[in-house]
Image 1: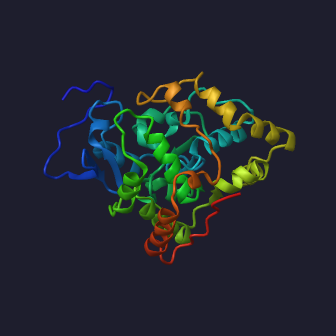
Image 2 (image 1 turned 90 degrees about the vertical axis):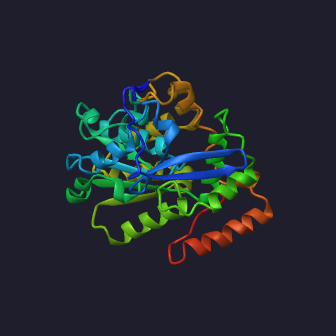
Amino acid sequence: MIAKGKYHFGPITDEDEVVTVTLSEDMKVENLIVDEYESRINFRKNGKLPDPRIMIPQIQTMDVFDDDIFICAYKKCGTHWVWEMVQMIVNGKAEYYSKAKACCMLEFHLPDEYSDLQRPRIFNCHFTPKCLPKQAFEKKCKMIIIERNPKDILTSQYHHLKLFPQFSLPWSDFLKSVYTNDRNVSSNWFFYRKKWSDFLSSSDNPWLVLKYEDIKQNTFASLIKLADFLDYPREETFLKEIQEKCSLDKMRDMEKLRESGTEIVNSDQTSKLYRKGVVGDWKNNFTVAQNEQFDDLLKKKLNGVDVNFTYEL
């Protein structure tokens, strides 16, 4: 088929793993699963994003440099925030990158599109470890893993989805769709968290775990951790300048002025990804009963995994 974007999406065959996800009585979507990556078919058909059947194998086998940096996080954990900080630390300038972080997001491009990136290349993704380049592990590339309490993740994700006109689920139905997602894919937060927990307990790759709540509570201390981990020691005055440049309001305004980094969204839509950025906003959505139900589900699904999250500051 001829796609509207620059990528081509081939026909679905019997060999493809396709699941129909029921979000509500009036809303069903078809998702394509490749390894542990899941994406909506209708989001890929227009050719603005690569076909995951082509993209995932190419990413897994792509060539990487030993100074490549990978920022890995579940959706709505502060990936934009940390990516911008890392760019400034590495480049030694408290200046925003010319494009949004989507320009270096593994889910949005094919590997050959990264050939002109200045080294060290700073990638970001919402992948489980399985979908990352194999050479990233072989060459011991540095990895930054961002974690956030799941209640705020879901709250932020829900408000993000409400930006799309076709999304009309009430909060209770959205939670139900999360609770009934038992697919072994990265969009399932419980599965995603378990896979990264397994990786961190067994990998000898250099990695740094940053908690969203810790960054929020003491951004300067988190910048020091990042600079030390990346082996780019910076002066205190410079890190404080980065802290100021990476405030929520300034980054939101900046996104409106620069290229979005991908055809899938424009700059204005990217800027709307910055909403509140607070810790504890989940209390404005979860009822007492829903909160108790989620706590029970968390213990059940993540049995044996560290679930020591900060839910308020």
